[in-house]
Amino acid sequence: MKRGIRAELKRKALHLTGLVVPTFYLILGREFTLYFVAVAFVTFVVLEPFRIIEGLRDAIKVRLRIINPDVASSVEAIERHIHDIERPHEREGVAAHIYFTLASLVIVYFFSSRIAVASISVATVGDALAAIVGKNLGRHRFSNGKSVEGSLAYLVSGFLIIYSLLGPFAALAGSLAGTVAEFFNLPPDDNFSNQLTVAITLYLLPFLAV
Image (cartoon, rainbow, N blue to C red):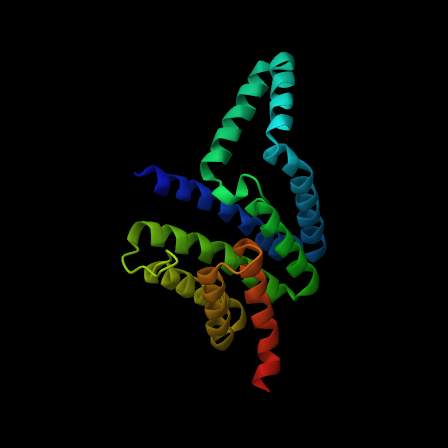
């Protein structure tokens, strides 16, 4: 397997852990999920400087080698895995998981349970499938590097997820909106804009149908 495809699979496998948010929402409710996502977001923000600033990382690793060499080796192994799956722009900028967690926090707080579960699930699964299918099976490419096959994977998976929660009309509108957001990589980051695009679309649908 090519290194680029292997790295993308690792990245999307990690990305799919975002499904823990809608899972917690369904099982444990809104309040617990809000608390969980808020704590995760704050933790990621606090740790972010250590990921970006090389001097901080090196200082910590030196201390760890003195205190506990085994822990130091584990930290360095994790660092190598993270470096392997990072996008180039993330190495000196905000990481994808911070954008994802912030969007999830906003959505869980402001939107209904079905919209929250649908939008976070679609953005998580759709983005992963679009990348995996596009990398492995994409034969018809657009100028931005996206593929017809990858976009269709997002559209179909998004439709099926939303259909089970909100019905066919919402499924079509929400999956189309998410596909467009994923295709254009809307700023500030697609891990943020994708979730919010789907959630806002699903929220506005009843008003547009009147």
